[in-house]
Image (cartoon, rainbow, N blue to C red; front, side, top):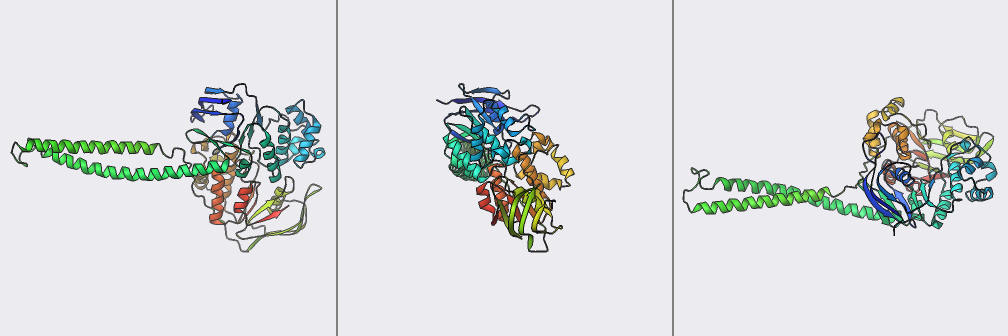
Length: 497
């Protein structure tokens, strides 16, 4: 028996006209390891909040007394020390157990727990939240994008933890991470919600196969409809001609014998019946075609055009060490970035990846050794932080002096609905916000693109779309990304910290 039964669920956010869910019904078992996928802004986080009872809705969600635990936890006082934040979330928390989990996540508890939570990096905050999550022994977990800002080793630890859990719903866009720890996929489509047994790759393969079959059937029906339309016109013309030839309709143009009347009438009746049959078949084909590709996710081709640069070498470092305050975070690295290279910076959380990116962009960061980067080099940057985004798309475009038509066109291609353009970006999902930064970067003329964790929150369809963009145009790119499949697919070389 299913533990969670959703019947005729409908929900629309206050002040919005387009429903997030409309008359949706499905069933889930709390023993399943469910991967929750779908395009950004489609309602994944909203659905988790509905399960938690945070919003009013129509329809029913029967949970049979299931106790839910939502991740990430709300932090009411980020200025508090980290151990105090942990105790606010779990009052009965045993500190030794939390320290143990932090060590397993490659963190020093003495360094982390006694610093203000808000001074931790995004990756450190994620690991602290996960260490707290690991203290939760009971309850059905609703885990919303746990891998954002999380390094590769951290992702492996989280997937190992989730494998041991009896059941959960996991929102993630990291394909390899999903493959490691799920046995069912819950996908939000354009018109419904679908549940399928298997991991991400098996779900994607079935989706591609089903869509290919629907596209082939759609093409066949389009040809049939065109053929039936032509046949309908021919038959209608013949029927009309036969009708005019009947005795008494136009006696000046037909024979006057009374014996022709029955023949001409039968002929006209037969042709009219054929015309009606063709119209019926055409209508049926049109209706069948309407039922196809309802959930087809259109992914348009993106373009990128980089400015020409006078030198083959864009950036060069020799025995470079970087400091954050008094602490050395990058030690003695040597590398070079040439035209057309896509260079991935790899390393654990706190190893100095973002610091290196900011140094390349010319920020005043204490260093020893050499970092050669021409100040005339134009850089287009994507930050891992999206919290500053607010106002409408038009306001953001004007403030950043973007080509507004190009900026909006890229957003549409990335799957941001036009209805969102007049909405305050504060209400955007994490993925929609990151797409704004990516669209800005692609719309900004530059010699090199520097991206800091560009795939955080970005849906699978757009990840593949951006991978294809990089393959097609081979831009010069320096980036940090913990999605190993994305990095493996686009990087030509890497810098290990």
